[in-house]
Image (cartoon, rainbow, N blue to C red; front, side, top):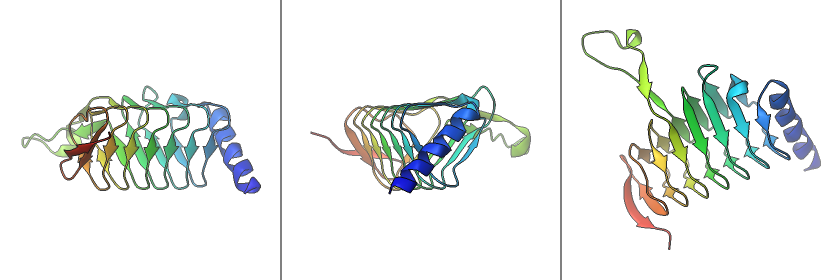
Length: 174
């Protein structure tokens, strides 16, 4: 246990040395891949499990993760402009978050058209279930829960529970 903790803190220190802002006692798991790390800000005691991919596609992209947040193994966060994850928020294994998508007019090849999108904001104390997908421009409110495998294409109200493809409200935290 102590070795795992020490190695996690060393990997977090490595992120800091590469230009990320990393809060005290944060941990980074093995095989973390992070691009353009100068755009990453991690709060205190953030835990990132193994095999996570933090893909900031340009030096202007920004990823902010609040204090005590948890990012489960196999998650991918793909940032073109801005993704913000609140404090005490949990991302279960395999979650995919992106703030952009490809343009797709029929008159041109997709790879020639560029991308568009909008910032993603995930509030405090939210829980994103395993293998859910959060699309560009979405805000997930404080205390919300996203069910496993859901595809979130629209904003989620605070304390709402959503599930399905596309995600729809199925309840609320009481």
